[in-house]
Every structure is written in C-alpha cells, then in structure tokens.
Amino acid sequence: MGLSVALNAARGSLLANATQTDVVSRNIAGAHDPAYSRKIASLVTTDGPVRVVINRASNTALFDRMMSSTSELAGYEAILTGLTTLEGTVGDTDAQRSIAAKVGILNSALGDAANQPNDVNLAKAAVAAARDLARALNQASDTVQAARLSADQEIAESVATINDLLGKFDAANKAVVLGTARGDDISDALDNRDKILTQLSQEIGISTVVRENNDMAIYADNGSPLFERQPRTVTFEPTSAFAAGTTGKAVFIDGMRVTGNGSLMPLQSGRIVGQMTIRDEVTVTYQKQLDAIAAGLINALSETDKTSAIGAARAGLFTYPGGPALPGAGITGLAHTIRVNAAADPEQGGNPFTLRDGGMNAGAQYLYNDTQAAAFSDHLNALRAALGAERPFAAASELPASASLQTAAAASASWLEAARKAASLQVDKESAVLDSASTALSNTTGVNRDEEVASMLQLEKSYAASAKLIATVNAMIQSLLDAVR
Image (tube, rainbow, N blue to C red; front, side, top):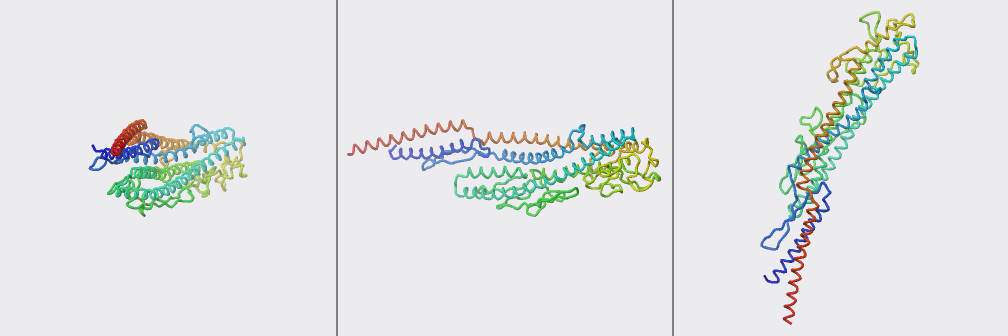
C-alpha cells in the first residue's frame, strides 16, 4: 500500500469516526427523551472513500398503535374526570348529603310530624328537610351545567391546540421533505414530526400516510383530512353559559361537522370526543334524572282538591316558577328551579302548620283541617304515603320505569357510579395498552445507554488506531525526506 493511500484511508477513517461519535453522543443525550429515536450510523464503502449513512430506528406499526391508544386513553380520561365531578353531587347514598338520603330524611320528618301534629318544631323540621332537599337538587343541577361549560371550554382548548399543532407539523413536514430531497440527515426532523403527531393524537384520533420524499398526510379517525400538503382548519364556537336545555356547538373540519348527532361521520376518539360525551350525553341524561325526581317531588307533595276527584291539584310543599299548576312531563331544568313553597316556609314568612292543615293554595278545597285540630295528622300521613309511592319515569331518564322517589334517587346515583366505574376500567385498560405499546416501541427504537457507552469506547479505540496509523505514515514520510536530504 502506498503511503498516500494509507494516509487517505486513515483520514477517511477519522472522518467516519467523528460522524459515528457524533451520532453516539446524540443517542446518549436523547436517552431519556421519549420522543427521541435511536440513530444508527452505518459505514458504506463505495469506489471512493468510506462514508457514513445515518438511519433512524423506527417501527410504524408500533407507533401507530401507540397513537391509537393515546387517543383512546385521552378520551376516556376526559369522561372519567367529568363523571368524577358529577359524582360529587351524589356522595355516599347512605350519607345524609346524597339526594336519596335527603328524600329519606324528609320522609322521616313527615312521619315525626304526623306522630305529633301539634308540635310546631317538628313541622318546621319537616319544612327544613324539604328545603335542604330542594337546595341539593338546585346545587346538583348547577354542577351539571358547570360540568357542561367546563367540557365546552376544554373542547375549545383542544381545537386551538389542534390548529397550533397542525401549523407546527406543516413546518416539520417541510423540513423532512426538503431534507429528503437534498439527501440530508433528516433523523432529528423525523423525531420532531413524530413528537407533534403524538401530541396531536391526544386531542383527536388520527392516522397517517407517507408519500414521496417522506411527505406525510394526516387524517382524523373519521376519514376527514387534517393535513394534505397544508393544514386544514378545525373550527368550534364555544358557548358562554349553559343552562338545562342549552345545546352546545359542534366541531367542524374544513366546514364539515364531525361531532354530534348531525355528523354523518363523527370522530371516534381523542380528548374532544370524551369532552363531547360529557357535555352532550352524560350530563344531559343526569339532568333528566334530576328533573324527573324534582317533578316527582312536586307532584307527590301537591295539594289536591278535597271536594272533587277530578279537581285540579296544585303545587304544595314543593313548587317552581310555573306553579301553582303542576309540572308536565319532561320539563327541562326543573331541578334547578324547584323550591319550598313560601306559604309553608317560616324563613319566607310562611306557616309550617300548612303542612299539617293544607291551605298553601287559595280555596277551601285545599284546606284539609277546617277546625285547626291540633291532633289532625291525616294530611301528613297522606303526604308521606305519596312520597313513598311508586311512580312512572320516562325511559329517556334511564331511571327505573316505576319506582319510589327515594329508589329513583338511589338508582340515579347507581347509574352515575356505574358510568364512572366503566370509564375507570376503560382508563385502566387503555393505560395498560399504551404502556405496552410504548414499551415495545421504546425497546425497538429507544436508546440503550449502556450499549451506546460501549460503542463510544469502541470508537475511541478506532480513533486511536487511525491516529496511530497517521503517525506511522507521517514518520515514514519524514524518514524518506530525511534520506533525500
């Protein structure tokens, strides 16, 4: 081998060694970054000098599975968070703060008042129990609407995040395409692009297609294009306030509706879908349950016409803004407006003995204790019987078809807990799937620090050998020059 050939070989080896060392250093630096994929520096021998080609460890199937699991998990986590908030309105059904327990407390208070109908304090206690129950329904309804507003705001934030990420993806994708066309090292650019995809999959379920020059297109899980050479616009109009019956707005991709009943191809996963489920399904059904219980209370404890079986009944212990007429079926928001009748409430200047005697409504037909007898308990017993009687509930409320009010309230709490438990199980399941996919992907594309350190030691030895060869060639050339002189 000629000295010039040996020198060029040594120099080429040093250059390749420097590139490999740089790659190993990058791997070590990115060892703890979950978005970093291991870089592989491969030596390629051609007719010319040895060169280094940098590749990136990847596994498309595992990465796609990880993104899918990320979307599913984000959706179920949003549902679980919303259900946990709503469950605060229920508490332990055996505890006094639950609606079911408060119905039971009112029932007991009516019984105590019936046993001693001349005791004004027991009458006041029964009215106080009714007031406490009405306020619990008011607060539960307020919590439902607050949860809907919170979900609506989260949807708006998700849409803003999606548009921001699509803008970042546009820049990252252009860097990959341009680098591919130039033959540059695009491994870090690919990492950046995949990182954006992972973040995007938290908000909305996505799939990707790679095209010429590593150009990538993104589609939502309903098939709507999110990115095809340029980002598409995702829009949503938030609602400033929610009341029972308020309908929230839908999400649109390029003008096409992708959420709600009006969508031909609704989104399937992601945080947006979870928040939509809370805003438009779970909370709406729970509000129907609360409203049904409120309507049942107003009707059960109403004042009936004692002179006629077909006479009009009027709101009694419980009333609402539409009183004294009894509420019809399916009045939305009744749980928010139910209150204790001022005629019976001492806090509002009323007489608690109207609970015993009747007379909360004008007319002799609604006065049951004409003589003001202190021992009169018939009406109190009738109210208690009506409170415990079974009554029908609409199928849309998902309450039992026929049940007492206390049973219905307990069933509502059970429905909410069952939904929360189901969401929790799904979160656990998807968390396990995501952990498994992430671990498998990390094992395939991640960095093993020990292996990289070992590679660095090998490169140091290679560097030393190349340096020694250069030194030897240099000494030989120097000897030749000395001999010529």
